[in-house]
Picture 1 (tube, protein in one colour):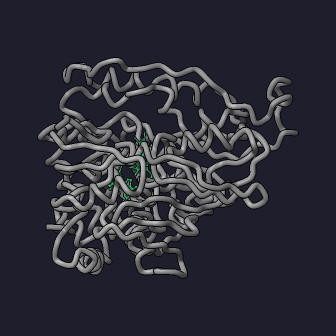
Picture 2 (picture 1 turned 180 degrees about the vertical axis):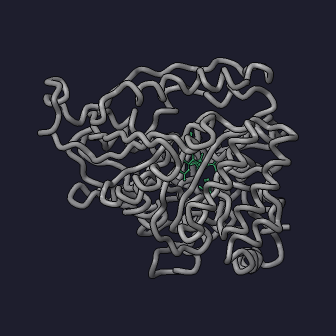
Length: 445
Ligand SMILES: Cc1cc2nc3c(=O)[nH]c(=O)nc-3n(C[C@H](O)[C@H](O)[C@H](O)COP(=O)(O)OP(=O)(O)OC[C@H]3O[C@@H](n4cnc5c(N)ncnc54)[C@H](O)[C@@H]3O)c2cc1C
């Protein structure tokens, strides 16, 4: 038994944790009685990969094939996005979709159907999966794709590990000319301005904004948008970059070596923590050439930054509301959050494109994400926010959630009931794959 948690360090549980190197080893673990859940790299924030018995996938991490002419890669599900970048970036290939950290596994990326800064143009990670193999509760392996065993494919993408253990997946990497991004930063004085900027940035491949949650009144929603394109080698200015346009930039990482005491986290420390990043955007020119690491993964530069929230841990409240809910919806929710003063200094805002998948989080509309140290007051606030999000036709992201109740899930995920029935049918009366989250929100018993 070992103490374990996901990224938010809330909840922390004691679990029987083990890994596997081969499909035979995995099969023999599944033959043992009792329920299990896959644990990728624990970068979901709450309890989606937690359970009394957890199967760690990280050792199952081999590259299986790569077609240099098309960029088609097949790899085992325990491979991290960072490992793909390490091998393929220097050969001119990048991920079709990447989240705000490169330390997630392919299995975790599919199970949560993660989104990136290019969702409005390229959809979520799952929409790039050409095929995958999944080990079911009885040890059999099912091969699925949009055309083969398509129902199984459909419920596995965004299915939070409840259909089985994803073994491997095939998807296409995207050709790039350099490891640099041509970034444009746009400052917005308030929420209306930043929403105008998003709506005028449709043709940029990547866009995201950081909102200053301390700004109130007319300045509420004051923010900086970063939009970007992969830079062509000819656009690079620095001679060393021009010489090796695809070279990986290393270094610049530092670590948070221990958990901060809970009292250490107040407005000042949050402000100080975000200062470096925020300040860089303020003082920089409006157009920059930046490394892909600083554009996509600014938080990865601080290893174990989650420890800054102390032993009590934290959660991220990420919701989406449809575009049709209008600016009014976002304004009211943001005002309730900023008035509470409970959340992080910065929140991330993004405009999603259309998405019609079965269980995934994104929908055409605005998504906002910010961190909250765990406290009674925050939990009370979330109940109010949940009601507002649901009334506006929105929903919460399962990969970030540690506290939503079954009624909220049922009300906001239109296919909740069908998903529950499909999972029950797969289990044929004996639940095998279940997490603390799936039990809490009523997908599994
Ligand atoms: C700093 C930071 C930034 C982030 N930014 C974004 C973002 O921009 N966009 C976004 O979408 N997400 C984002 N996330 C969330 C993260 O991408 C997801 O939670 C992702 O699922 C984590 O993958 P993991 O490998 O760590 O999986 P875990 O967290 O261990 O597990 C997540 C889910 O995947 C399931 N799972 C894992 N492996 C398998 C497998 N082999 N077979 C079946 N099921 C499996 C688990 O059971 C669980 O339900 C961010 C997280 C962090 C910490």
